[in-house]
Length: 405
Ligand code: FCB
Image (cartoon, rainbow, N blue to C red; front, side):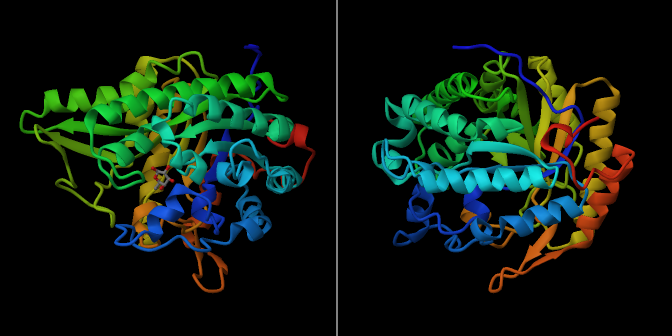
């Protein structure tokens, strides 16, 4: 393994995040597509054309630039890049190179996630994260991505929320492969950590000197009714064992939305207080809480790679983000090394098993015409970022000075 000095963008990264499957459309070669279409599927609806961002990414990036953001987090789809084992689709890689070029043309630093929930069918059919070969396959895929795109990447996330992939797929049974089995869940968490390591090693050997890390789903937790022990067991698997693993990485992506209550029987949905439409507690202070908790485990730089709220009430979104950014400011003032903040999400998009119901976007997307309409929260976020940057992010510049201090 080649260890090298990771080069962080000079400026704090202000961005918004998306994921390939949730916005591109036509992710037919994935385990998710099959899951949504199987007889009696628990998915609310199929993903279909999503936001058609496979074709409309230029329009999406124009909006990011108009908002004055200096960064955009998106993912590349393994199932498109390696549709069959060992078979690399050069057109897919060229497409993503064009997306990266479109970012640089707009002075937007691209933060690229390599795996965001979906698996190619050939991987799923061969056992997915339970295959003994999974770390080798993900390492090989990361090598392909690094070699083809690495010179254009500003920051890379290996796996998005591996802890959610495991928890939802092997415990809660609401993601493929719809399993509920504690020991398989624990084993898959271990496999995902090995995959992450293989991907870091592969990316480090390729071109570019961008920082590499994983993103972790974190939350504030509170034990109720003597739920302390159950909570400790759950959180050890969900967070602590991952946090112990990342100490040699270049950064950790912290993703947080809410607070969960935990009783002796497990997680308690909702709680007393304002609830979001997804039934989550309205809890923007989870931003500061999770950053502090991550800091207890590791001193590597942190990036809030996702934070936001699913709501049809855009005033509630503005209220949530106002408080979340105040908590981020406070954590930074307290000296926590945070390098960026990515609101989830740029667009109303496909919210996995819940379909198109939950609205996380700063921008509404017409489900028939795909027309994008920024909501008031988009302008609000642009102003909040401009106030914190002390300047509006540059609208045009060369890649090297795109996020200059
Ligand atoms: C996170 C996922 C992201 C999105 C948000 C709401 O767990 O990473 O794709 O679904 O939740």
